[in-house]
Image 1 (spheres, rainbow, N blue to C red):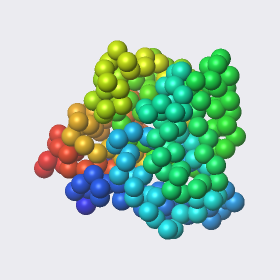
Image 2 (tube, helix red, strand yellow):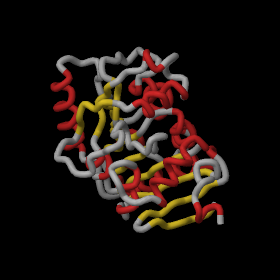
Image 3 (cartoon, rainbow, N blue to C red):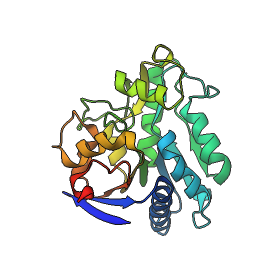
Image 4 (cartoon, rainbow, N blue to C red):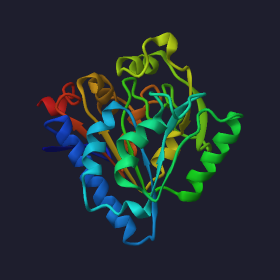
Length: 256
């Protein structure tokens, strides 16, 4: 394991995806224990998707997290998608984490609620009221955070919004096996905004796999720009990024 620093951002480099998941889970457990030492209960924002599976496996196997005092939020859901759909992020969270850890509560984003404006306001208010202590997320192949595709808004008063997904983001969903074709992939989603994701006291970003290497290089070694949403992490002293050898393979400093 190796540690690097980019501006204000600490980066931990692991040898494998599984080791990365273990490291993120440990950091999460430490942050949750510290927060629960001073609060009766906390909320956390957790990401979904293939890149988060190693974290989910590691964190659900730990015995030092008091999930009975933790409410789980997540960060996005496809517009119009039911919880029963195989690609639903609510379903992912239920099957990969909630069913194992029995949290105090799991609050899902209802992508199929109509009108969508009601759900945007409901979930935004929920996030504001619960004031999450920890965010765990990934970085998309186009550098997105949640579904904030480039060019992203780094400053907004909104907590959650309806977003248009770009083609790179939609192709990623096909590549990960969630949809059979681009034509069948949703074009819009409900997503927490970047300020909402970064508002937590601790932000942990787990990014494994070679397909994320270009996004990682742009995020860490490029300029801070809305054209690479994840580049904003360079300015976040309360954030920590976890990479494996594959996702870090294009970094100049990691290669040296």
